[in-house]
Length: 446
Ligand code: UDX
Picture 1 (cartoon, rainbow, N blue to C red):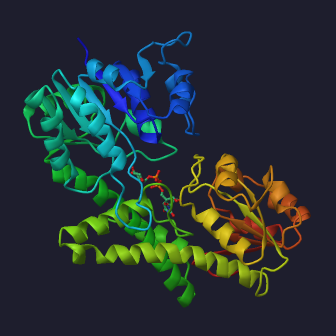
Picture 2 (spheres, helix red, strand yellow):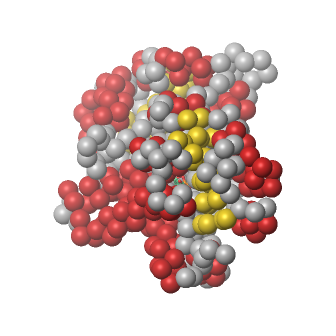
Picture 3 (tube, rainbow, N blue to C red):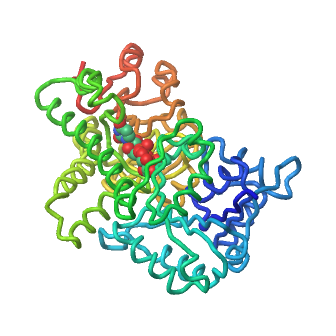
């Protein structure tokens, strides 16, 4: 009998994981406490933009014509507890209001609801990003609360998916990491991930704290890499160098690698910023805060990039924003996503608006979310409409659509021909040829 899986929490991580597990051939029951999400998902629709996810979901949701029927949704904890051999906990762990630490209340509540209903042997697998030490504590809760006692076990299996590539990253991960305490738990997870493992995905077996740390360490490393190249951008700017050429040149060293070396307005999103802060907070609790003080610098270098972009825009306008029109291309924290959580683009747009600029934002997929969070900014239905009459154009999220814009046509629409590339991805030569003054972060002015 193939294993029966459940997924608790159907946000980015959970919705993708549930659909991917059905794609791998398992029967999956997914739960959320939000009835609107469940209703939408049960119709094969997803509440966010993620390439390929809706198609994968629709291929499996029960009741959809032509689907495998392997994926169902529920709001009943009883049903989940009775159904699953393996339960994946995929709820989110946001940053606590006014603190660096992460908010564990959704995780606590999921375990609190599920555990007392577990009457048969089961493996509960935490996928949420949590402070190191959480698994140890949650394992105790499980054994104490579950009627099946020792037959219920915990494993920790961090998730490394990137927004925009969630489907691919879940079906073909570059590694699978499991924190386990028994061979039984390890074997169950080997069964769940048999397909990617057969394709060659490395399967790393660890203890609980190591598995938890792998996730935060990976995100801390990525954040550091981005802030490193942004620090080099600041030095390049001061020295008259070009950070893009520098990044290319150091990237050829395969110990360094070319990826994640794009200087610009820095990282944002629902993961990197809050994960490095939660990591610092947890290290402090463990008495290891000195080990992570560098992450404070990583964070502040990153946040400084946003202010620097605002300064560049102000300077381009001759010293002030009052009454000036600013076109902002991009609202999401990265392309191929509609996620605007801690978006550097909207942060910059918001700062300029507060300083008196008339900001008009356009984003291919993030308009609805941007409007919801920043209702006082102006919005336009296309890049052309945002640029019409603008005194300066800011490129703040690196969507392909923006690289494909025709700078000559835009030059007809704008009032001031200045473009500031906050992502270092536009073709500088092309824009300059069309009459624009092109400026980018960490690069010389031509
Ligand atoms: C990240 C991790 O990559 C992923 O493994 C983890 O599971 C969750 O957090 P994600 O939040 O989807 O994924 O975004 P990511 O692709 O890492 O980009 C983060 C931010 O860094 C974006 O705002 C992006 O624009 C920025 N970035 C990325 C740069 O500024 N420069 C770069 O070179 C790369």
